[in-house]
Length: 231
Ligand code: IMP
Image (cartoon, rainbow, N blue to C red; front, top):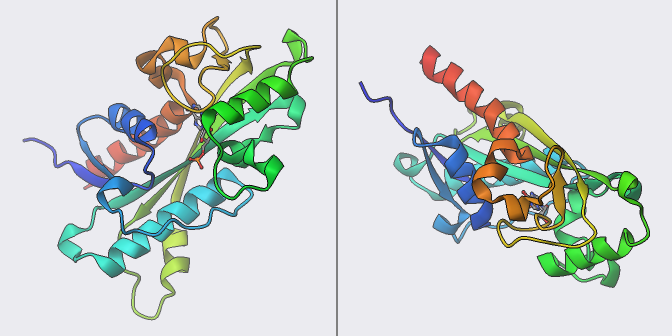
C-alpha cells in the first residue's frame, strides 16, 4: 500500500529554502510555500532567538490558514525555518539578524541584499587571522499543526503548545573572499569543517547532506516516521 503523503506549507517565500527542504524531506511530503498563499501576512519576526522567530512564522501562518481557508484546503502542518550565521569573533553575530546584517548600520527597514551582507562580513573580518575565523550556521524549525483550538482556548497560545522545534548546526569558518555560485546568503563565504570549498562551491547536493537545515530536517524526518508508524 502506498503511504499517504503528508501535506505541509513552508512558511517562507525563499525558493532556495523551499528547494532544499523539499529535496531533503523527499516525496512522502507534499510541500507548498508562501508563494501559494500570497495574501498571507508577513509577521514581525522580533524574537531574539531562532526558535522564537520560527514559532512566530509557523503560528501566524497556521492561524491565517485556519481563518481564511476552507478546512478541506488545510495542510496537516506548517513548517517554518529560522536560520542564520554565527561568527565566533563577532560574539556570535549576526545570528537572528543575518538577513538584515548590513541594514542594521543604516537603519534601513527590512533585509539587506546577500551581496551587502557578505561585503560587511568580509570587511569586519579583514584583519582576523585564519585560526580565529570559526563560524557556524544554525537552523531551528517550528512544526505547527493546522488545527482549530478547542472551544474556549486561546488559538495562539494553544498552537504555541502544539508546536515542536528541531535544531541543526553546521560548524565551519569564514573564508577571506567569496567563491562559488550555488546556494544563497552567506554560502560563498562559509567553508564547512572537513572541506576546503565553500557551500556555494560544494553545490546543493553536497550542502544538503551536511547543512544546518539538513540536520534539523533529519530530526523532523525521524519524528514524521514515528508518527506515520503510530497512525
Ligand atoms: P531567515 O529567512 O529570517 O531565517 O533569514 C536567514 C538568513 O540567514 C538568510 O537571509 C541568510 O542570510 C542566512 N542563511 C540562513 N541559512 C543559510 C544558508 O543555508 N546559506 C547561506 N545563508 C543562510
